[in-house]
Length: 409
Image (cartoon, rainbow, N blue to C red):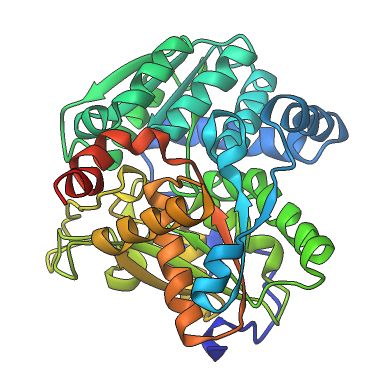
């Protein structure tokens, strides 16, 4: 086992601190008009999140509507092919097809308690948009979803799903027309009506307290996976692996394992076309510290501090920054991060689909490739992979890439 994947010390449970910092990272860098809304959100979190009533309602919705606990599946053929023991935490089996629903349900329940009249959300791959639309419909609230115009085109099935669930989808034609632009537009909307609108942010990014809130709501993934590994495998994994864009499924998997010194943690980012600026979305492996959308974290920027556009075949990983807790975990040495290229991820997707009967999201496929690479260097390792979502939404992309190649072979 790579020593950098081991825990040399217990994770400091005090993070984030009172200022929303994870070591040097995090904080709150926003216009003054948003400060009261963020303060109100923090007060609501303090009052409701850990209360017995909120936790009971959240648990009820997760069990009876989302379908939790999600399964832990042993992957027999991948295990044989890779010479390892491979387990998949099946977030693709959650209602709406990805881990995003955990956070969307929790934030919408919180929004109702805070007296909000409408939900707004941003989305890249569309999964958080679909989850937000579904949660808002479930709890009787109108929902508006901002989505970059590029992502609207490449994730058309999810746009239709959001509309069928009653949400208004607003294509964002400014900026890079992907997730970063969608977040910018959602923040503008929130500034215009911070009292009546609740911004349901989809990943562990942005100003405090969002990274903390999303982590707490998504940690159900790691808590379940930890218990399931002990029950089904008889031991904890040697390594837990997840894809990282903004970082919500990864922090949800990693957090309950942080103090397990024997469990390595590995995040896999979007390596895109290569290491050049603008060719990838690998903020942790290739980025530098800066401020993006309310948080001090690792971001992809040029020598003059200008945030750069990114590239990934995966809409959900196509983001110029990352959650601040991931930046802290990288610098502390507790979690290792690496990247997988577009081609590597697509190859891993086809392998998982062909040999395990599971079509993962392209986002998830980055983690699967990282797991395959890890297995090659660590024969016999017990590997836990977060299967963050299913690949149905990616069919338009797959038709233009791997299926096109198959049909002409």
